Length: 155
Image 1: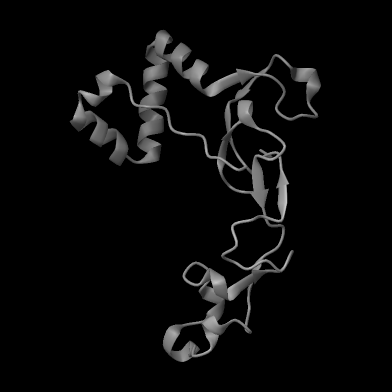
Image 2: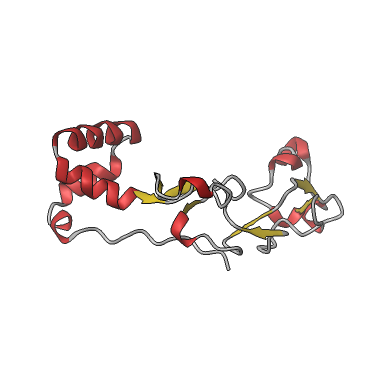
């Protein structure tokens, strides 16, 4: 139902440069953006490669049919699930999310011996103890992987 797009494999010529690969993987995002910008300014073939990989022609939304041939980003971040998705692979069941918030389920046995003075506030334990929370939109348990809303990703 909900799948993450796999990362493309690294080109073989980059694998033969492990120090460069390590430098790329550890570099700050702003530094990589600046370097990529300089490469694209000075190297038209690199600009073509980046454009082919990162842009597509078509409307930016399903409602925007007038701009069919305008270039747009191929990868967007979804408003609902906060995941990056490929606009070419965005189907009606691609995105799952909850419209509400996680709230503590004080009836859960997770909190039976909980002492906030010792263990911290229950409200701050969503990640550590999701089974002790419920979604206020659908009453599903916090550790239940099934979303209550499923639809297209929204940029």
